Amino acid sequence: MQLITLVAAAALAPAAPQVVLTSHIAVERSVPGTAGKPVITYQEPRQVTPGDRLGFTLDYANRSARAAQNFVVTNPVPQGVAFVGDASPGALVSVDGGKSFGELAELKVRNAGDSLRRAVAADVTHIRWTFERPIAPGEHGELRFEAVVK
Amino acid sequence: MDRKKLGAGVSLAALALGVASPADAAGTTAGSTIVNNVTVDYKVGGIAQNQLSASNSLVVDRKVNMTVAEVGNSTTTVSPGQTAAVTTLTVTNSSNATLDFGLVASNRSGGAAAHGGTDNFDVSNVKVYVDTNGNGSYDAGTDQQVDYLDQVAADAIVTVFVVADVPLGRSTGDVAGVRLTATAADGSTAGSQGATLTQTVGANSAAMDTVFADTAAGGNVAGDGIGFAEDDYTVLGANVTATKTSRVISDPISGTANPKAVPGASIEYCIAVANGSGSAAASNVVVTDLLPTQTTYDSSFGIKLNGTVTGATCNADGVAGGTFSSNAVSGTISSVAAGDTRTVVFRVTVN
Image (cartoon, rainbow over all chains, first blue to last red; front, side, top):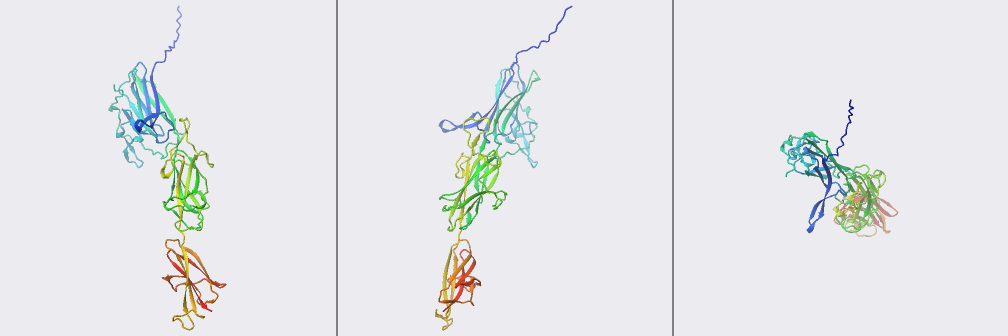
């Protein structure tokens, strides 16, 4: 009779590299450039006040060994800022709290008096990028959008 | 390589409805945190993976801006000697935070006044009142005297009155300019004036910093956390002159034909009070005239007040009034309008 001892082996594999996200907020500042012409630069947020223009960036990198499919990046527009319409190509926006997305030019908003008007950038509540093509292993990129502090 | 080829298949119905929300003019409240949360959903091998997320936040700093403005676009017209003369101004807090504002009212020293004219005198007993009952006009006893505005909310407008006394001895056209200065102060504590604000220097801190965004509009200094505006008082006085004339009415020998001023003659005196054009009306004008010793008051004719003149002639259209005592005629003309002349007329007999 053989004793068969079953040992549940918890295979502790090293943590597999994944898709990595790094996000940033920068403030747009105008600094004097060469020949006295002001130059727009993006700086670490410093004394940010209403009216300042912010750049929100997301760097993504697929550090895994497998393609990342159906990659969807969703960014709600934060409280206290208004989207100004500058977003990386392929962005679709929502003006109804994220229920539906489309091109800004095609969206409509209901006024207080119940009439409809074209949506404007300041109405945007969410921004979304949906990648049709998988992100290959090792592939990386950056998405960004701009908003003004209300 | 185009990393992000997104197809039209992703867009949904053209009609997506949302409701626009208006923002305060002053902006997001200072000290608020802007939090950005990004989420990523994806699949590997057709299997949905755990959602990824990333987040950043920053604190909105305090942007200080205010406007002091005079109300009404015109001077306050005053009489010499007038007390508690009021000029009205507003203080608007266009910062993104509730602030206190220290208030100081001061006299201008010469130069062009706010509404034309040159400042050439000072008003006295200058005080600042807040429009406590919010009705836009100064109500003595109700509106509170203040030296600061307590906890003015972002975007709020407060009406303030500068109240002062006008000295006697000023003439029509004299101008006293006054300036109301509002200094931004911390507004965290109700009922007591907060510390005057200073700008945060150096790098952004994790806490709320303070930035002065006030402009140089209206002659102000930009970025000093102080706003001011000027208003003025212009004097409109009365320009009163009195002229006394007399004519012989009759004498015992000639009667009324070319009478002479001989003993027994009746003499009529007319004191004409003239007020220059462009003046304020002169009211309660008291005229007193001591009769010469060689004459006797004609009590049957009496004293006629408020008569008019035609050229150099005093018309006989005055109304009985006034008093005679201690050999003096006294009468009060209730009002002499600008450009008008009114008279006190009485008669005496030459002794």
